[in-house]
Length: 234
Image (tube, rainbow, N blue to C red; front, side):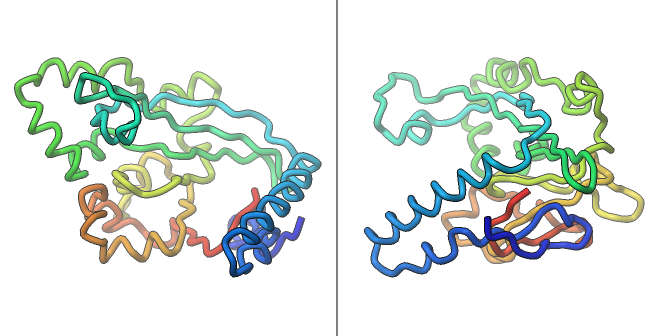
């Protein structure tokens, strides 16, 4: 594999990955797809031959009421307007040359997300006639992540890195704190954040505003955030 420098000296085990750079530079669409396929196969071989993760576990976060037309993009003609999905985060434990590391992917704070995301706030208001039913669905079986981590012998302070596939609906303040002695739910974790999306948070496209918690990163200490500008390998 073509492994480059770490993104941050505090995370020397997370490094830039350059295997697909050349393929992404191919101009024409069809040749670019073929180059990415070939590069992906070679990268997959390299990853499979390398170090393996110690453990992976999914942790349920919260049920999610979502419009059927968005969930299936109109492909599945269901008669009811909403579906219920379960949002889960992913706990990954790695063996690295710097010791065992714990990563949580998509550890959404469901209460802050529900309150702060305009789309879901408006959806909840539109379902006011179903109040108790909707409330029971949202809160059903939702054990705090702290308890679920304890089930596998970990605590929130054992988490080294947080990451999200994207920042829709995320309020980072309960997770990372806002300084002034408030370290958040994961006091020792750094956040991996794609630089482009992080910078766009301040000036969202109108079509994105319904999906972002506008002030969801306000006050989060910048030294808790590691911005990424490239593919990464852990």
